[in-house]
Length: 71
Image 1 (cartoon, rainbow, N blue to C red):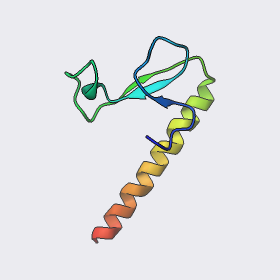
Image 2 (tube, rainbow, N blue to C red):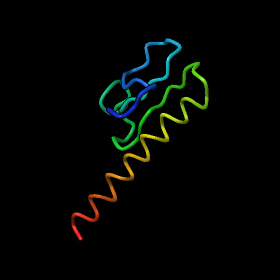
Image 3 (spheres, rainbow, N blue to C red):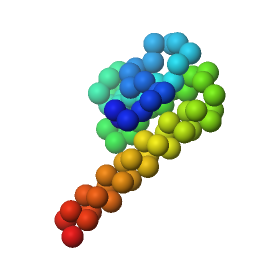
Image 4 (cartoon, one colour):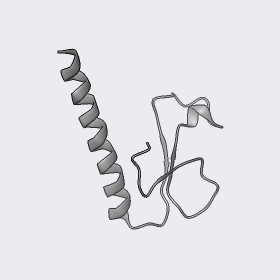
């Protein structure tokens, strides 16, 4: 999550910004830990998608590197 540039890792306070959080660690504890909650703000859709895309690409790279480490 530290690779996010536009989206803030925090619980939404009702503002107009985009946020992402782990609900299981906050007020929605019934949601499984592996699920994230994304609150989309008023930023440009392309900017939000781009921020998520670069994070998912980084996660995929880390995952592939971890697989090659064990092989």
